[in-house]
Image 1 (cartoon, rainbow, N blue to C red):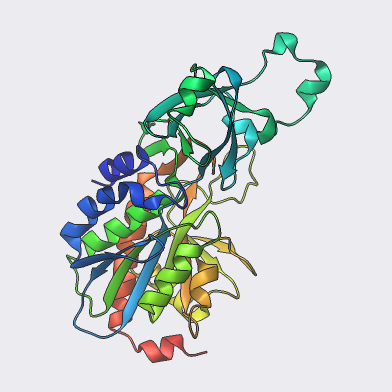
Image 2 (cartoon, one colour):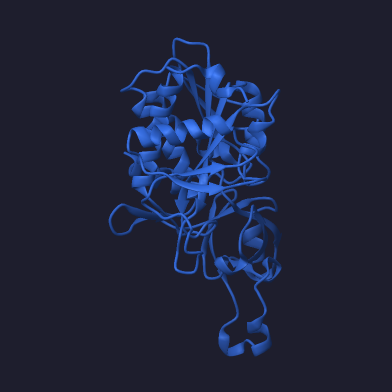
Length: 346
């Protein structure tokens, strides 16, 4: 089911600021395992699984993805564009795209052939302003279909690699939305006293905005932030986290030390694999918003190892998704049966 969910959600678009367009997909998968659903005013999706107690635990994984936005309609059916979130322009060359205008318009991003590119030009890095979407329409036809401000997304079907590895666009951070789904499923099997809020946050890629509003609305006692981390490849440092070896637990000043230690203890107790990383300051995740919401929310940060971040071929291991969801469910169960005040006090 996790693979089915990820292939479904990654085949559709949730560009930052436009997350509302395909929300029915999340409702379809989460509602069988949760009791209620609502959206906040910024577009984050909040699914609640009620418990008999009064404590609130919020899981946060952003649903938005990076994308493109049309800035000009040019002669010959070409479009200029800018980015919504962080792209390396080199990864956009030769990509197929869909422009979500009055109707869907398909295009390609090309560059000059090497035969007519000077040696000096070849040495220069690609810049967004020098790239164009070619639609094949005339300018007059295109103006009837597309307007400035329309979004565009890369066309890339999810694929299965060897073993339990899969590749797609937007696993950042839909891999962790899948973790929340696995946690919800596991909590149907084991007890929990707390009220659990599975929150697919909006606009993380453009400033953790959805995490700000949803955490203010929920006002949880504990935050479990989920995002992706940099998975090891041959050109990465040798001590980088590896795919298939479990989630990455972060340590740092913005993360509650006792909660972090408690999660590590739970993983050890139940033989769940765990990797570690140091984050002494900014985490670059929804943690920045949750930690300082209202009077402050004690947080932990877990990451799924991912290769090729912010490209259309992001790659993860389904095992990491599944095991992280199970570990979080056990963590919640252990917290419910512990002295929470003792854990949370410094």
